[in-house]
Image 1: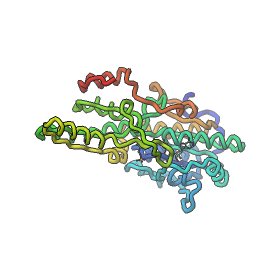
Image 2: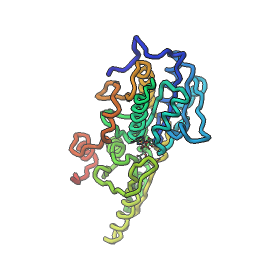
Image 3: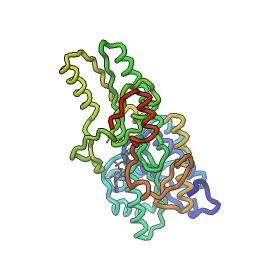
Image 4: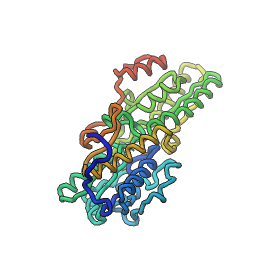
Amino acid sequence: WNTGPRKEIYYEPEEVKAAIVTCGGLSPGLNDVIRQIVFTLETYGVKNIVGIPFGYRGFFEKGLKEMPLSRDLVENINLSGGSFLGVSRGGAKTSEIVDSIQARRIDMLFVIGGNGSHAGANAIHEECRKRKLKVSVVAVPKTIDNDILFMDKTFGFDTAVEEAQRAINSAYIEARSAYHGIGLVKLMGRSSGFIAMHASLSSGQIDVCLIPEDLLQKSNATDASGNVILSDFGVHMQQKIKKHFKDIGVPADLKYIDPTYMVRACRANASDAILCTVLGQNAVHEAFAGFSGITSGVCNTHYVYLPIPEVITAPKHVNPNSRMWHRCLTSTGQPDFH
Ligand SMILES: Nc1ncnc2c1ncn2[C@@H]1O[C@H](COP(=O)(O)OP(=O)(O)OP(=O)(O)O)[C@@H](O)[C@H]1O
Ligand SMILES: O=P(O)(O)OC[C@H]1O[C@](O)(CO)[C@@H](O)[C@@H]1O
């Protein structure tokens, strides 16, 4: 569907109670989205806007209270990284969340999160329909990993690629200056290597880029949300490289940098800040148009609304047969390991 404001709106702004929740891990730009949702709601005339603290947990965990939000309060939150509302994983209890939505008389729920949060948002939407509650549940895709289907990019990704350059450059300088130096940098991406691929393409200082599409080492452990915990491949590589050079009797001075949480906690860069602004505003137009169970994003250069079930069928991966991955291989000069 086309995005943007509609001539006819489904809600009477003065009667609306709107809630915002941020779930999953951090991504640069979360505060920019919260801020734009609040600004746009106020522009429509909504007076009752609240933030749900610490993800879905804020709906049912004792001691967590909703936060009244206003333009004055959120004016400057985009100046820092993180989430003004807090985030969390786990604790997805759909019926308790909907009980809480009902008790708080929420009409619009804005869920800012990744694949898991979208699955949660869809479950909340379904449960609201089942109970015949007139609640618009709309999502804004957030993932530093850029692993949401159909989206050209998700906010935070550009910032992550840019911020990763600092770590790559430091590793490069250390490696160049050391006798038999090697620099190793670990970047985030869970099961999708978009950050690594784009950071390699943009840096030009990389000799080998490895992506999880090739290298996944699964364990049986899961995090609070049920995501499989992958073993630390950076540490694994560090040990393997050291052992290899020891075994062949060649000195190697390996410097390992893991900048992952420094990258994730950054403030959004200019291009992500613009994306967040558009997505935040579109989410509010989406809710006022009466949509629910829908997410907004940028797909094939167009801003669009998409049904949540379509975008969560699977995470998006780097296609090892794609032009982009082959451009990366050409740029680094590494062999194709396939
Ligand atoms: N299938 C699901 N149904 C309902 N809720 C879910 C589901 N999967 C995850 N959730 C809930 O959504 C929230 C966020 O999930 P998760 O921790 O997987 O992060 P995410 O949204 O995928 O973001 P990130 O990209 O940072 O990992 C958690 O509170 C989790 O319990
Ligand atoms: O350590 P945390 O907060 O559970 O998050 C780690 C995961 O979150 C992400 O940054 C984003 O989803 C992944 O790349 C990573 O695997």
